[in-house]
Amino acid sequence: MHNVALDLQAAGHQVSGSDDAIFEPSRTRLEQSGLLPISLGWFEENITEDLDLVVLGMHAKGDNPELLKALKLGLKVQSFPEYVAEASKDKHRLVIAGSHGKTSTTAMVMHVLNSLGRKADYLIGSQLKGFDKMVKLTDAPLIVLEGDEYLSSPIDLQSKFLHYRPHVAIITGIAWDHINVFPTWESYVDTFRKFISEIEDGGTLIYYLGDETLAELAQEASSRLRLISYSLPKNGVRSGISYLELQDGSQIPLKIFGSHNLENLEAARLMTQEIGVSQEQFNTSIQSFSGADRRLETIFVNKGYRLIKDFAHAPSKVKASMRAVREQFPNDFLVACFEPHTYSSLSPEFMKQYAGTLNSADKALLFLDVEAFTLKGKTIPEIILVEKAFQCPGMEIILSKGLLVERILAVSDRPVVIMMMSSGNWGGVKLEDLPALAGEQLDT
Image (cartoon, rainbow, N blue to C red; front, top):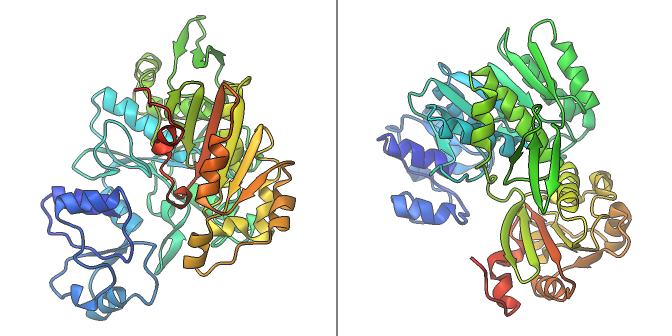
């Protein structure tokens, strides 16, 4: 939402906004642009008859006083994706969806187009090197959109990606997520079925062949769409560096790693191919791609320590990220630290999806932020139920950030890879400070 505000301001519009909590980096960026609200909270006097548009985020509730005032005045109210869809209705739309990998795949497509000087607008769910914002809406003829399946707004209870009507779409895979709004596997699959039905007639669907459910959905639309399947491209790893292996026997070094990232790369290649990017152009451009923020992001490598930060929170994401790190560093001592920040992840009916996801670690730490649960009025599940669900022998459940840091720094094995997975913030622990806490100097 704050990126939309920044983009609208850059286009010359007068913008204001409200929220009851604003975190970094949003807070600093809004403050620097003069858009930070004077007071946190919702105030109906902020809504006046002269407003042209109210953009409504999912964080607001249906009884929000500003929303109710806007509806009473008959103002134009749009959800975030509805606004983006209207702004891109005359563009050629590329949409990347899937339960996992959509941010990384979107980032790859954006990176390649940017490196080739192709003019394109975009929407992505993470900060990306080379781009000052996460949203850009101009007069560009092309737009790259990360398609999120979560709900659009409290008064627009459909998946965000159903607004976008792509000409070319990618679906990276389907693995049950967002149990709070998709209470059954069938309801979750159905929203992807609807997404496929919204692809423009004669459009292209690029899908991961290894997902049986997804392959079945794709075939349902085979008479209306052009289907392109993909799988893991040929690759290798030497000295901690991943390579693409080409048909002529040559190899391309990459800055990313992990089977799931290489699958994402293949999907991105096929999508850019649909808009005229040659394989040679793609291969040249992708070598400099270092990943999206918090997607297997290496924070530091220092004196035998390697710390990696990852956004993984859903079971399929945790599994893929763990597999990637273990494949890349097979002989290192692996410490896996996981914070299930999405509270629905710890519901009894969903928690069993995490069974075995941390088992490849030499040391597994599960962090539950007591303060965050208290603020949300949630109750931490019984430890014995969590242990039973994760089925990870020796996994240690930690309830304080102080003990978390202590347990991480207690590892004396070298070399050691510390894998930090969360969609939250570890109760306020700054991962960048861990080298200092350990009494070591950060290598630059």
